[in-house]
Length: 154
Image (cartoon, rainbow, N blue to C red):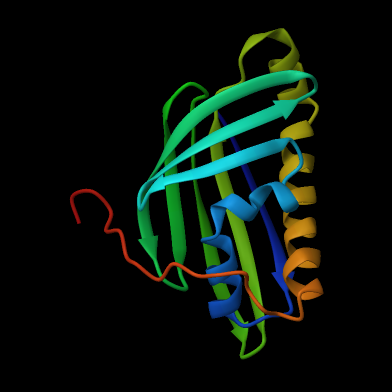
């Protein structure tokens, strides 16, 4: 397993940043390589990706969601990955969004890309585009899901 951690500071309140992040079907607007995400139910999403010509589909489960604080997930089939996005209030109008993701590169190309830091740069770019996306909307999110999903065993 490999781990990547990246962050970006956005010029919106923590509630706005969090609300926008819960709109998973909007991810293709700022995540490179993500072609489609379908929200199946409150805790499950279906992803279609294409990276360097490699098409993948997988399902993910949201394992924890605390409004204005964090969203954690793990894949349930297909590509093995898990991660957490945290939202840190810097002041009334600024938020730090941090992504930590564990993933299991498959095959020679993915392992080489991992060693070259391609995934790190991809996530850093996705966060930069998220910043541009939410700030470009005048700090108005496209929707919100404020439900809470407690960590298993909590």
